[in-house]
Amino acid sequence: MKRLLPILLCFLALAVPRLYGQETHTVTFSAEPASEKNYVAVKDYNTYDEIASGTAVKDGTQISVYAYCDKNKYAFDYWEIDGVRSEEFQTDKIKGYVVTKDVTFVAHFRELEMLPITFSANGPGTVTAKDSKGVVVNSEDKIIEGFYVRFLATPNENAEIVDWTINGERTKAGKTKFSYKVERGKPNTVVANFKSTAPAGHTVKYSADPAEGGTVKATYFKDGKEVSLVSGETLPESSYITFKAEANEGYEFEKFTVNGIDAPEDFANPGQYATELSGDLNVVAIFKSTAPAEEYTVTFAADPAEGGTVTATRYDSDKDEEVPFETGAKFSGDENYLTFTAKANDGYEIVSWIANGKDVTPSDPKKLGELEYQAKAALDLKVVFKKLQKNYVVTLQPCEHGTISIKEDVDLKAVPEGTKLTVVAKGANDKCELKSLKANGKDILKDKTFTVTEDVTVVAEFVDHTGVDAVTTTTLSIYPNPAREIATVTGLAPETAVALYTLDGQLITRLRADHAGSLQIDLTALSDGPYLVVTDGATQRLVVKH
Image (cartoon, rainbow, N blue to C red; front, side, top):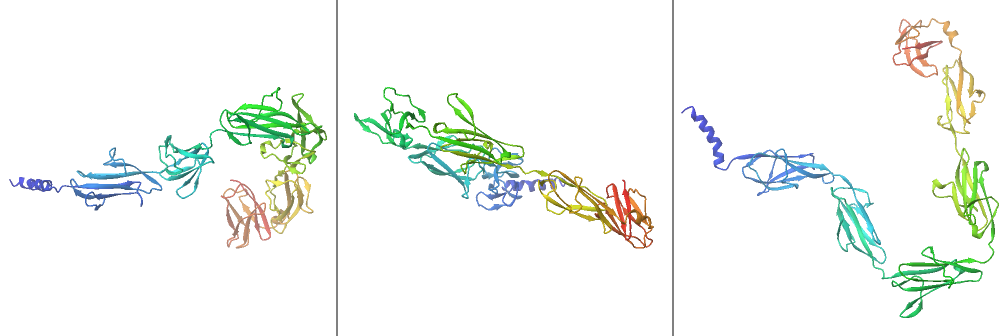
């Protein structure tokens, strides 16, 4: 019995809370990804008291779980409950959840996408759009999902908005503006549908070409009577209209064109055209002059002449082909359409076309070599060519006992042709003298200048008067020489200053001898080749070979 007592007491401790409804469960929650604006909040469903993550609540407690996120960057995606993606709860709010066990909620958020939105007008009108900040949005622009775009439909004159087609569905009848939320998984297409409110019927226009060539009159039948028609009037479908052309003195009627197409010739009634109205109509009576065609002279040339060539052709109706047209030839008023072709010579490019002092250069760079021109008077045409800028490379060859450079601020890899350059020569020390200076083999020692007309190599030669002869009279010694990693210099006065130079005079390092008159030079960082060890009154060549 004594052994069973502890077991009985333990059972009672576990059973009493269940008997009195005091069993508790832990509620844990979090956000993924979590941040100051991405988080989960839990409240008691009945009291609205906030519950902290990890809190134990009574069995059967109802709670509400809310997911909050930075709506400028994220959107709620799904709930994970006890490690399993929930199919039951699909929104960012879970209300009245009954706690019957330990439970863990994780709100998963996803980054918002930039989605393209397309919009257009269907019919007589236009559509404009702006985002929530008032910035203009163009069709095909990308907008953050969940954000709104405000659309405005503007009908043309004699038109009105019908409705909108949003993602393939007709809606919002009569609305000229509305706000649309950009959503993932939708095509995000918006079309404004317009319709015309113009009076029923068709517009009829007529005119003479040229205006001074003659007159045009039009009549139609209304209520059984023939009445005059004013150009620009609107008539009902199937109205029967007759046009009559009369030439002025010095002209004769040639033909009618209807909506830009030659009308059939009425041999029985020349100068007359009749038709039944089935659409908008634009009738033009073409007149031509009966005076002898005036002749004009056409001249054309390249400027400068060596810049290129210019040729011309005209259409010969008898041969039904383009034929050459020579500069200085004459043409008549009815043969004034000319085609000019320009071709630049090597080293030149076309800049402009000038006709009688006026710039008529084609706007399309791809068609700069051809010009179709209608000459209505004497023509003097010039095609202006420009010499292309050539660039050359100037190479300064490294030299021993000194350096050379260019005084002018230029890119030596691309020096414009005709540039005059000045060479600055500097000895490695005051004992080094410039003896020779050549540009592509030409001596320029006197004034040290040359003009660039081709790729140029500049070569300088310095003589070091403190060279080998001076070195042989000193006790300065370097070993090993050639050296690989370290060179030792001896025969120096105690604490003598020593400098190491490249052959073109660039200082590498300065050293000082010890009390015994020697020093060591670390060569591990140097490239293979010759260098100069210079002391006061002595210079010795050191060769590095790794």
